[in-house]
Length: 358
Length: 269
Image: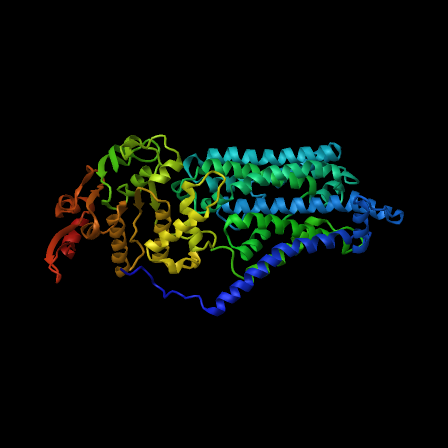
């Protein structure tokens, strides 16, 4: 009995085996070493540079039995009240956006999907603009933008479900998402038109460009739990995302309750995206390119891909935020940088390397 | 094993297929024949519960499948779709391991036991050499074999195969049928569709024939694959030829007859 084969099989030779081993070592080094290096770098760079030795000194003085050095007081204040919250926010937002993007790409079976596909960013952006117009203050801006981000996706889901009664649930959702995003972007434009051009309009514009310069410890207390609530179910369900990427019917025939997994994935990804955008403003491209990059490094299996995407996303945004706060004397809006770096980076990914999709 | 009683199926409320009844015993192969648009796919989708039946019942091992969860159904029925692409370049081993999903808890990933079952499925089809290849880079025939391996890893009682020989060359079609025969010899119940009535002669125990606007036929190959039935289903003249092969085996084959130019013109007017 001969099996069906149209091409001769390749026997793995000695050379390919050792090179694949080397590649695997490189992957492990990249996955483990990168975050540590980026993290150490991030503590030191910024308007006020902190040397690694100063940092070690501060950490040592904080440990039991350590002697606080009065000369390092101001450095310590900067580190704990400004720099560390900002670093934590960059890690959380980057990880959240990349994880949401990776999940959506599996759910919508399309590697070109980003976390704002269902209107989360457009809704959150409108929420922020509206609350700034109404002078609601930082907490109010965050709350309204978060709620409207979720509201926009809920609207997309409701209308999309009505549309998909004739079949094609996934495509209906994507198309409805485009409609809802456009509507909310137009609302944002109306707000800009109505805003006072001397103070409110610049504030809105700057917020929409995205950035982490205003993040403090209080923001983290809200952001961190929301990111965890969104991320944990996705991590638990990540095997099902593999199956879902083969399409609705096939996933059903393999025993997956596709409707339930889809709604959980949408809720969690929306939570991640809306929570991120409400803290950081619009930060594009992270949710699109990081899953691509991760897929090239570790392959498409969500069992590995999803945690690695979150990790790479966290590192990437932290690195870009380091550039944002140290490259020029003035702070560069993070959203502009992620796009400026992300777009050419994406082209390089497309031109070189193994493609992350079929 | 599989009993279908008075099943009507279709989209919305309009039945496309009406009053379908047949049964397939354990280890049998049933070949579903019928022209384009007669409702083969609709019937398949209803058997797999992608569509709700408009009437009638589907029973597996004597139990109606109504109200079964996706997971329960997937443990009983494995589906082999036509070879297709995937949006991401999964390895063959990953694709086959996905067959284990129906046996996993909601939050679980495959264990080492699941992985060894996936390896067994590859071995059973003699495609272990594809294990570490990328699914999306395989040929159509190889993809089809991988999808069968995935369904075997699912360890169902019944395999439902949608045109397993489509997109295969002549030799690979026959090799595919040999594989299906082998599976049924080892106890697997198979329901498959085909566009070639010859495939029914080659490997099936039972045949079902869907005809547009005519009653559903099911029975043994000898009963169903006749010149008259094929003509009523496909609208062409077919003769069944019987010959003795060099091995001494008696084989049957369908020979379609083309109309002459005169008959064609007559048909037009």
